[in-house]
Image 1 (cartoon, rainbow, N blue to C red):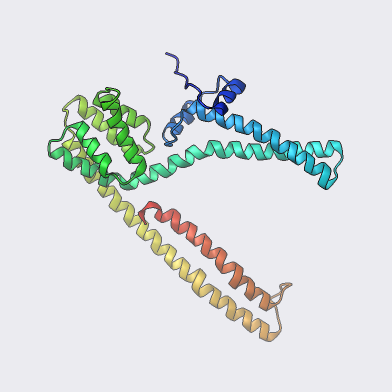
Image 2 (image 1 turned 90 degrees about the vertical axis):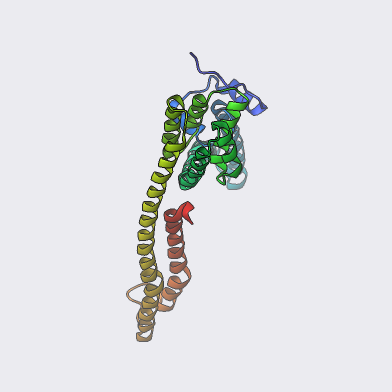
Length: 296
Protein backbone atom coordinates (compact mmCIF):
# COMPACT_ATOMS: atom_id res chain seq x y z
CA UNK A 1 0.00 0.00 0.00
CA UNK A 2 1.32 3.44 -0.91
CA UNK A 3 2.18 5.82 1.87
CA UNK A 4 -0.59 8.44 2.25
CA UNK A 5 0.46 11.94 1.29
CA UNK A 6 -0.12 14.88 3.60
CA UNK A 7 -2.47 17.43 2.10
CA UNK A 8 -0.82 20.85 1.73
CA UNK A 9 -2.51 23.64 3.69
CA UNK A 10 -0.56 26.93 3.68
CA UNK A 11 0.61 28.95 0.68
CA UNK A 12 4.25 28.19 1.51
CA UNK A 13 3.49 24.47 1.61
CA UNK A 14 1.55 24.51 -1.67
CA UNK A 15 4.31 26.40 -3.44
CA UNK A 16 6.87 24.02 -1.99
CA UNK A 17 4.89 21.04 -3.28
CA UNK A 18 4.58 22.66 -6.70
CA UNK A 19 8.32 23.32 -6.87
CA UNK A 20 9.69 20.09 -5.39
CA UNK A 21 6.86 17.52 -5.36
CA UNK A 22 6.76 14.62 -5.05
CA UNK A 23 9.00 15.20 -2.05
CA UNK A 24 11.64 12.62 -1.12
CA UNK A 25 10.81 10.02 1.49
CA UNK A 26 13.62 9.03 3.88
CA UNK A 27 12.41 6.24 6.14
CA UNK A 28 14.94 6.54 8.96
CA UNK A 29 14.79 10.35 9.06
CA UNK A 30 10.98 10.27 8.86
CA UNK A 31 10.82 7.99 11.91
CA UNK A 32 13.07 10.35 13.86
CA UNK A 33 11.01 13.33 12.69
CA UNK A 34 7.82 11.69 13.99
CA UNK A 35 9.52 11.36 17.39
CA UNK A 36 10.53 15.04 17.55
CA UNK A 37 7.11 16.34 18.61
CA UNK A 38 6.73 18.75 15.68
CA UNK A 39 3.01 18.93 14.99
CA UNK A 40 3.14 18.95 11.20
CA UNK A 41 3.45 16.14 8.68
CA UNK A 42 6.94 15.27 7.46
CA UNK A 43 6.23 16.21 3.83
CA UNK A 44 4.65 19.51 4.90
CA UNK A 45 7.77 20.35 6.92
CA UNK A 46 10.05 19.49 3.99
CA UNK A 47 7.96 21.56 1.58
CA UNK A 48 8.25 24.60 3.82
CA UNK A 49 11.99 24.10 4.31
CA UNK A 50 12.65 23.76 0.57
CA UNK A 51 10.55 26.82 -0.23
CA UNK A 52 12.29 29.00 2.39
CA UNK A 53 15.64 27.66 1.16
CA UNK A 54 14.95 28.82 -2.42
CA UNK A 55 13.63 32.21 -1.29
CA UNK A 56 16.62 32.75 0.98
CA UNK A 57 19.04 31.72 -1.77
CA UNK A 58 17.57 34.21 -4.26
CA UNK A 59 17.10 37.07 -1.76
CA UNK A 60 20.59 36.75 -0.26
CA UNK A 61 22.14 36.55 -3.74
CA UNK A 62 20.43 39.79 -4.84
CA UNK A 63 21.37 41.65 -1.62
CA UNK A 64 24.98 40.44 -1.71
CA UNK A 65 25.32 41.25 -5.41
CA UNK A 66 24.21 44.85 -4.80
CA UNK A 67 26.54 45.07 -1.79
CA UNK A 68 29.56 43.82 -3.72
CA UNK A 69 28.89 46.18 -6.64
CA UNK A 70 27.81 49.34 -4.81
CA UNK A 71 29.76 49.22 -1.56
CA UNK A 72 32.87 47.17 -2.27
CA UNK A 73 33.07 48.08 -5.96
CA UNK A 74 33.86 44.67 -7.41
CA UNK A 75 33.66 43.97 -11.11
CA UNK A 76 30.72 42.06 -12.58
CA UNK A 77 32.17 38.53 -12.66
CA UNK A 78 33.92 38.63 -9.23
CA UNK A 79 30.82 40.14 -7.60
CA UNK A 80 28.62 37.49 -9.22
CA UNK A 81 30.85 34.62 -8.05
CA UNK A 82 31.27 36.04 -4.54
CA UNK A 83 27.52 36.63 -4.16
CA UNK A 84 26.67 33.16 -5.46
CA UNK A 85 29.16 31.53 -3.08
CA UNK A 86 28.03 33.43 0.01
CA UNK A 87 24.32 33.02 -0.75
CA UNK A 88 24.85 29.26 -1.23
CA UNK A 89 26.62 29.09 2.11
CA UNK A 90 23.84 31.03 3.86
CA UNK A 91 21.03 28.96 2.36
CA UNK A 92 22.99 25.75 2.96
CA UNK A 93 23.39 26.61 6.64
CA UNK A 94 19.67 27.34 6.84
CA UNK A 95 18.88 23.96 5.25
CA UNK A 96 21.26 22.20 7.64
CA UNK A 97 19.72 23.86 10.70
CA UNK A 98 16.20 23.04 9.51
CA UNK A 99 17.11 19.36 9.07
CA UNK A 100 19.02 19.14 12.35
CA UNK A 101 16.30 20.89 14.41
CA UNK A 102 13.94 17.84 14.57
CA UNK A 103 16.86 15.65 15.66
CA UNK A 104 17.74 18.14 18.39
CA UNK A 105 14.14 18.20 19.64
CA UNK A 106 14.07 14.40 19.60
CA UNK A 107 17.23 14.24 21.70
CA UNK A 108 15.90 16.77 24.23
CA UNK A 109 12.58 14.92 24.56
CA UNK A 110 14.37 11.58 24.92
CA UNK A 111 16.48 12.83 27.81
CA UNK A 112 13.46 14.36 29.52
CA UNK A 113 11.37 11.21 29.17
CA UNK A 114 14.16 8.92 30.41
CA UNK A 115 14.57 11.10 33.51
CA UNK A 116 10.84 11.10 34.27
CA UNK A 117 9.92 7.57 33.20
CA UNK A 118 10.47 5.68 36.51
CA UNK A 119 8.14 8.01 38.41
CA UNK A 120 5.47 8.33 35.73
CA UNK A 121 4.99 4.62 35.09
CA UNK A 122 5.41 3.83 38.78
CA UNK A 123 2.36 6.05 39.31
CA UNK A 124 0.50 4.26 36.50
CA UNK A 125 1.44 0.91 38.09
CA UNK A 126 -0.08 2.02 41.40
CA UNK A 127 -3.29 3.02 39.60
CA UNK A 128 -3.31 -0.32 37.78
CA UNK A 129 -3.12 -2.09 41.16
CA UNK A 130 -6.35 -0.31 42.08
CA UNK A 131 -8.12 -2.02 39.17
CA UNK A 132 -8.58 0.98 36.87
CA UNK A 133 -9.29 0.39 33.20
CA UNK A 134 -6.54 1.04 30.65
CA UNK A 135 -8.26 4.11 29.25
CA UNK A 136 -8.79 5.56 32.73
CA UNK A 137 -5.16 4.79 33.64
CA UNK A 138 -3.75 6.89 30.83
CA UNK A 139 -6.37 9.60 31.22
CA UNK A 140 -5.48 10.02 34.89
CA UNK A 141 -1.74 9.90 34.12
CA UNK A 142 -2.08 12.65 31.50
CA UNK A 143 -3.63 14.93 34.14
CA UNK A 144 -0.71 14.66 36.58
CA UNK A 145 2.25 14.19 34.21
CA UNK A 146 4.80 16.99 34.51
CA UNK A 147 6.85 16.23 31.38
CA UNK A 148 5.10 18.05 28.49
CA UNK A 149 6.13 15.64 25.72
CA UNK A 150 5.32 12.51 27.72
CA UNK A 151 1.98 14.06 28.66
CA UNK A 152 1.27 14.66 24.95
CA UNK A 153 2.08 11.02 24.18
CA UNK A 154 -0.28 9.82 26.90
CA UNK A 155 -3.03 12.15 25.67
CA UNK A 156 -2.39 10.77 22.19
CA UNK A 157 -3.30 7.32 23.48
CA UNK A 158 -6.48 8.64 25.10
CA UNK A 159 -7.44 10.48 21.91
CA UNK A 160 -6.84 7.45 19.69
CA UNK A 161 -9.01 5.27 21.94
CA UNK A 162 -11.81 7.73 22.63
CA UNK A 163 -12.08 9.62 19.34
CA UNK A 164 -10.65 7.31 16.67
CA UNK A 165 -11.91 4.08 18.22
CA UNK A 166 -8.56 2.25 18.29
CA UNK A 167 -8.16 -0.73 20.55
CA UNK A 168 -5.51 -0.72 23.28
CA UNK A 169 -2.91 -2.60 21.24
CA UNK A 170 -3.09 -0.27 18.22
CA UNK A 171 -3.05 2.85 20.41
CA UNK A 172 0.06 1.57 22.20
CA UNK A 173 1.70 0.83 18.83
CA UNK A 174 1.03 4.41 17.77
CA UNK A 175 2.73 5.64 20.97
CA UNK A 176 5.74 3.43 20.20
CA UNK A 177 6.09 5.00 16.75
CA UNK A 178 6.13 8.51 18.23
CA UNK A 179 8.31 7.71 21.26
CA UNK A 180 11.87 9.13 21.13
CA UNK A 181 12.92 7.04 24.16
CA UNK A 182 14.05 3.44 23.69
CA UNK A 183 13.16 2.65 27.31
CA UNK A 184 9.62 3.99 26.86
CA UNK A 185 9.22 2.09 23.57
CA UNK A 186 10.25 -1.18 25.23
CA UNK A 187 7.87 -0.57 28.10
CA UNK A 188 4.99 0.16 25.73
CA UNK A 189 5.91 -2.94 23.73
CA UNK A 190 5.58 -5.03 26.89
CA UNK A 191 2.24 -3.38 27.66
CA UNK A 192 1.06 -4.17 24.14
CA UNK A 193 1.93 -7.85 24.63
CA UNK A 194 0.23 -7.83 28.04
CA UNK A 195 -2.89 -6.29 26.49
CA UNK A 196 -3.09 -9.22 24.05
CA UNK A 197 -2.43 -11.93 26.66
CA UNK A 198 -3.42 -11.21 30.25
CA UNK A 199 -5.11 -7.83 29.74
CA UNK A 200 -3.55 -6.56 32.99
CA UNK A 201 -0.62 -4.18 33.30
CA UNK A 202 -0.21 -4.24 37.08
CA UNK A 203 2.64 -6.77 37.45
CA UNK A 204 4.46 -5.51 34.36
CA UNK A 205 4.32 -1.84 35.37
CA UNK A 206 5.39 -2.46 38.96
CA UNK A 207 8.29 -4.63 37.80
CA UNK A 208 9.39 -2.09 35.19
CA UNK A 209 9.10 0.76 37.71
CA UNK A 210 11.41 -1.06 40.12
CA UNK A 211 13.86 -1.84 37.30
CA UNK A 212 13.86 1.75 36.05
CA UNK A 213 14.37 3.10 39.56
CA UNK A 214 17.35 0.74 39.98
CA UNK A 215 18.81 2.03 36.71
CA UNK A 216 18.16 5.57 37.91
CA UNK A 217 20.11 4.96 41.12
CA UNK A 218 23.05 3.53 39.17
CA UNK A 219 23.01 6.50 36.82
CA UNK A 220 22.95 8.95 39.73
CA UNK A 221 25.94 7.20 41.32
CA UNK A 222 27.90 7.55 38.08
CA UNK A 223 26.85 11.20 37.79
CA UNK A 224 27.98 11.85 41.37
CA UNK A 225 31.39 10.28 40.66
CA UNK A 226 31.77 12.42 37.54
CA UNK A 227 30.80 15.56 39.45
CA UNK A 228 33.43 14.74 42.09
CA UNK A 229 36.13 14.60 39.41
CA UNK A 230 34.88 17.84 37.82
CA UNK A 231 34.90 19.54 41.21
CA UNK A 232 38.52 18.59 41.81
CA UNK A 233 39.48 19.81 38.33
CA UNK A 234 37.62 23.08 38.93
CA UNK A 235 39.50 23.74 42.17
CA UNK A 236 42.84 22.85 40.58
CA UNK A 237 42.42 24.80 37.34
CA UNK A 238 40.19 27.75 38.22
CA UNK A 239 41.05 28.41 41.88
CA UNK A 240 44.60 27.28 42.57
CA UNK A 241 45.89 27.57 38.99
CA UNK A 242 45.20 31.31 38.47
CA UNK A 243 46.66 32.14 41.88
CA UNK A 244 49.90 30.32 41.01
CA UNK A 245 50.03 32.03 37.59
CA UNK A 246 49.53 35.50 39.11
CA UNK A 247 52.25 34.89 41.71
CA UNK A 248 54.70 33.67 39.05
CA UNK A 249 53.95 36.60 36.75
CA UNK A 250 54.25 39.06 39.65
CA UNK A 251 57.70 37.69 40.47
CA UNK A 252 58.71 37.92 36.79
CA UNK A 253 57.52 41.52 36.59
CA UNK A 254 59.61 42.41 39.67
CA UNK A 255 62.63 40.79 38.03
CA UNK A 256 61.95 42.72 34.82
CA UNK A 257 61.21 39.65 32.69
CA UNK A 258 58.20 38.52 30.66
CA UNK A 259 58.83 34.78 30.41
CA UNK A 260 60.06 35.03 26.85
CA UNK A 261 56.71 36.38 25.57
CA UNK A 262 56.33 39.58 23.49
CA UNK A 263 53.91 41.11 26.03
CA UNK A 264 54.66 42.32 29.53
CA UNK A 265 53.91 40.40 32.72
CA UNK A 266 51.14 42.87 33.62
CA UNK A 267 49.41 42.19 30.29
CA UNK A 268 49.81 38.47 30.85
CA UNK A 269 48.12 38.75 34.25
CA UNK A 270 45.30 40.74 32.67
CA UNK A 271 44.84 38.01 30.06
CA UNK A 272 44.72 35.31 32.73
CA UNK A 273 42.27 37.20 34.96
CA UNK A 274 39.96 38.78 32.37
CA UNK A 275 40.13 36.20 29.57
CA UNK A 276 41.50 32.89 30.76
CA UNK A 277 39.36 32.47 33.88
CA UNK A 278 36.02 33.43 32.22
CA UNK A 279 36.68 31.15 29.23
CA UNK A 280 37.69 28.23 31.46
CA UNK A 281 34.66 28.87 33.69
CA UNK A 282 32.35 28.81 30.66
CA UNK A 283 33.88 25.50 29.53
CA UNK A 284 33.29 23.99 32.97
CA UNK A 285 29.73 25.32 32.99
CA UNK A 286 29.02 23.58 29.66
CA UNK A 287 30.60 20.35 30.95
CA UNK A 288 28.54 20.55 34.13
CA UNK A 289 25.32 21.08 32.19
CA UNK A 290 26.07 18.16 29.88
CA UNK A 291 26.79 15.85 32.82
CA UNK A 292 23.91 16.88 35.05
CA UNK A 293 21.31 17.61 32.35
CA UNK A 294 17.77 17.01 33.58
CA UNK A 295 18.94 15.67 36.93
CA UNK A 296 19.47 19.19 38.29
